[in-house]
Every structure is written in C-alpha cells, then in structure tokens.
Length: 243
Image (cartoon, rainbow, N blue to C red; front, side):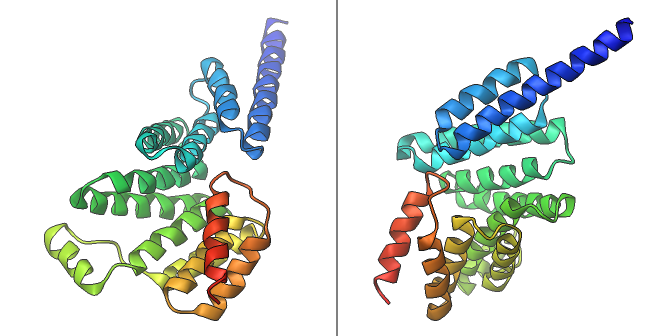
C-alpha cells in the first residue's frame, strides 16, 4: 500500500509542476518575462534539478537582456549562461540546454575581449552542433546557428587571418552556412518572425537585395512574438523603405 501511495504522490507532484510550468510558459508567450521568471524560480525550489525549468530560465534571461537597459544586459546574459549550464548538468540529452547556452554565450561575447570572443565562438559552435544532433527539429538551435554564421560571414579575410595567427583561429563557415541554417529553422517553424528577419538580414548584408526584400516583408507581416521583435520590426521597416 505504501508503495502505491508513493507512486500516486509522485504523479500528483509531477502534474503540479507541469501545470505551473505551463503557467510560466503562458506568461512567456505574453512577453511578461518577470512573471515567467517568478513562476519558474518557484518551481525550482521544489525541483532544483529540473532541466526543463533550468533552460526556460536561461531563455527568460536572454529575452530580458535583449530589451533591458545597456548597463544591465550583461548581468542577465550571464544568468542565462549559468542556468543553461545547470540544465545541461541536469540532463545532457536535452537539446534546449545546449541551444540556450549557445544563445547566451553569443550574447555575452560583446562584453569580452578578442581572445575570449574566439574561445566563445568555438564553444558556441560545439554546443549548436550538439543541439541539432540531439534534436534535428530544434529550430532555436538552427536560428542561432544561422546568426553565428551570419556574424562569421561579416568578418573580412584580413580579420580571419589575424584571428588564425594571434588567437588560435575562428571556426569555418559564413553566409552560405548561415542561409542553410535559417532555412532549416524556417522549415521546422515557419511562423517565427526572427527566422525570417535574420535570413533577410543575411541576404541584405551579402548583397542579395531581392531575396532580402522578400524575407523582410514576411518578417514585417508577422506578429511580435518576443519583446526583442519590436526592434527587429523597426530595422525591417527602415530597410524596406530603402527599396
């Protein structure tokens, strides 16, 4: 009898956590990030090794950092790194932990020196490769991968050579790899504004104006899904006005 009571208790506890997690997810979708953070943290007190909550907290902190004042951004991004690493420690097989670690490392790179930036590039690439290996349907991993390659595509040959000579070298890749990654993200989740915006920006930066116009028009037609999408819409509308 005691064994069955324990099983029932565990089932009830798991159900309660899932329900509360759903509440946090709803607040996240509403872009009420502080409320989502509070809910996730309350669950963490009951379930400190819950990988799903840990990567969700990493996501929340990235999203808060993306729209907060400049002097506070680094604090949120470093929290995002911390919780993504904890998620991976709790469950290495969950792709989301690796995806959000890559996203948060990319966010803190702007606060680092040149050598550390190169080190972060290698770690980001490793985490993204692992994320898509664990879950080939992880559109977040693909869109971050696309942004990663887009950034590499914008680095000049001279800068590449200097990085190779002085800093141990950057990962291979560029606009072509970024395009493929964004297309994978769009194929998996076609209704995400960020995917189309980033692909449009890649086309714009690489001189493919008609393709840029097409993707940016799609992005501009979509509803805002993340608080940072408001900035993406502003950039999109400014570029479209140039055509």
